[in-house]
Image (cartoon, rainbow, N blue to C red):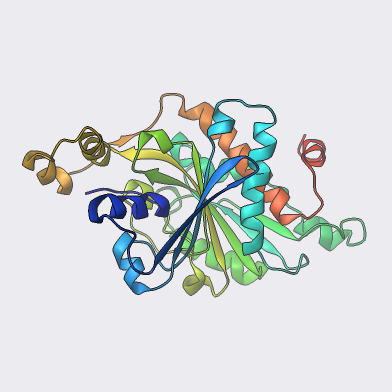
Length: 297
């Protein structure tokens, strides 16, 4: 009944209902640049089945300080995400990486991916033309493949063609997610080394974007922008100690509405910039916030 793309929420829900962390799942909490981080490691198939997430590493960064507009909060949030993302990247800074902005740019809650790409520094073409001048940068390519509803082609099929041509050492896919709680919507960033399934946040079914699909590491970077209405109803009832009425449970097979904040346009614009800057800091060692303001102006 509860739908969430966040491994930290799925693990927490298991603990709430079963009283313990499931076998095969490890949860660690710490702080990075002043931001709370939850690391969830799904070690085996037992843990994967328990929380409904593939085996792998999931890192969740809470953005409370950014939302409260604390001093240097944007820069610190960018650095926190970059520092969590960097260990998942190819170690050799000369290895090319492709960034894919997943989602429909015309639908605001689904536009996180394209917005992030808009703020990502693409360098592959410049390094090819002027290798000495751009020797300090990693080769980075970026693409926004759209959605099957507008292209008629599965996202994975389009990206497979680009991957075969560009031959990156790894791919980062950026997409909108679904959360269990409204309090986490547009307030959380999840990084995962498992890839993702495009459209999962709104109940879509598609070919997974993963190592199995492309033959290279696929890192997923996402922000929850929506909550399933039925999930929100159930979670609210549980929060106030109410049992779930049978009528509500029976609605789980019905078409579901999606809930999103009324200021979602402003939030997606800010979060897209945040993810783009974090990607730049992670991909290009030595780059500073001041450098990005210069290059992306």
